[in-house]
Image 1 (tube, rainbow, N blue to C red):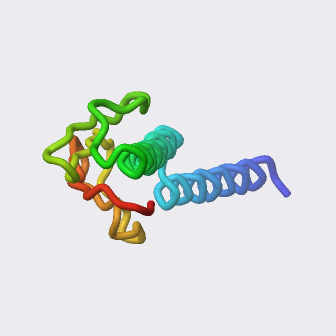
Image 2: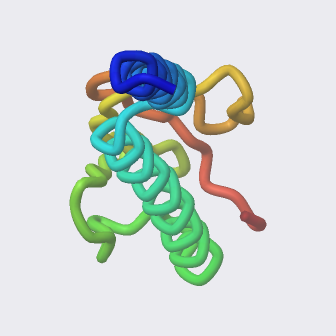
Length: 119
């Protein structure tokens, strides 16, 4: 095999590999996108924990707490004796496969919730 043929094959294989990597990144998203999606998932977990905290307080005291101990980035606001809001800022909207309970658009979104005897 001549030097030119070997070099042509190496270039062709390199282009194929670059294409495969590019398609893989396109289909799976970039590492930065994956990081932001993971942060959005943590925000959903924080919302679930905050809801459990509010419901626990409501079960014990039969009223909503004046504030919650949840860490940022969750905002809490009591609306009346048993209705409250939990808000968070999301980088991306909910994926299509997300459950109904915590569906959200990108950006700041508030969930209006009813205090409950159960979580």
